Length: 523
Image (cartoon, rainbow, N blue to C red; front, side):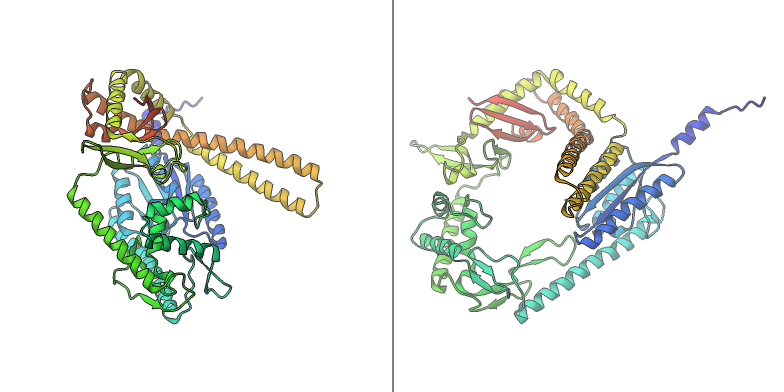
């Protein structure tokens, strides 16, 4: 009998050499013929990774219809980076640098961050492994070429649009409120909307302010361009500033930067603007338009003078106080009492227009501060009861294995159900099945879809808990190093631990940076 001795240390080393490998795929447009490219990338990389010895398939991250010139907006790309941060990925495979990013700076930045964690990115087309010694130089060259390609396409599109400006063939893709385009692409009056534009100009010329005009439009339940009946002062201001209502068409008012990520800017002379006089039927005269511009300028100058008199730092509450009824932001208002003392109030942006849009109460800034102090003291004294158990619970959930594989499997099941529904609809439209069978199968597919989508959401929730765990640890640090009992409001502590305050009629809900919500009654 032959006896084989197994070196356990050697076996452990071999086990550790297995790499968790994922793939990142992206198709940058929603053009139908690109859909095949997107699906084929998914299939190709799954097969490639599964076949390779020493590689463990860690899933596919895919963004469809997303631009590569910016990280922001690429949901799966950001999720992949979070999983890298959590130590779940060793190697990322992608088709090419242009599929990964067309912005050289962002590409190098991401690769360097991954390199620090010893995570390799393999660009198949360029045959670059980013952990290799020569990768930095090659990556810089290739990604610069990819960025130049993107900028060249943008430049060609810009040139084409400018030529159409000059020869009069440009068609406005989104006509201003009051106009529509006919079959030939020419501007025509939308008579109902044009009457509203006329009303806005008349009201302003009579001395009524922008917010008062918006209030009157809301009282008359006149729909906005999007069909809503909630006019804001900004929408009225945009109409008053637009010279299109004089019958003239001014083109190239904005432009996109030549360099990635193609930020859109207001044209202050960087490009030649094109004015087409008497292009379409006017709604106001040139004299009326000029009079309105003078009034707007005078109002703006008075506002600037007032701002210079009352120079103050931006409030830490700005953008963080949210209406619990309509979800609008609360705006800061300074009101003087009878004694001349200034009172700082916060009010829902929609309520400022009219109570009919939102009835939520105004709240004093001092009340926000006092309620934060109460919340801090409770949280500080019960940190070990609230936050520590939460951190331990999140730590256990985070360790749940196979989340990525579960997501992958659920997505396949969802797509399969959708294909079955399409086939069922096709059979029904060709009268190849009876209505009773059709309804029965539709109900089964709908139930399955709901089940799989709920399960997918649960998996995604677990994958997001890693971030929540990090934020909870950071929150505990602030609580531990801060005062156990806060006597007066502390701006630094507020900024460090509060994400937003939701204002309800009888309570304030403090949402902390880790997502935990704590409710305090309004005093």
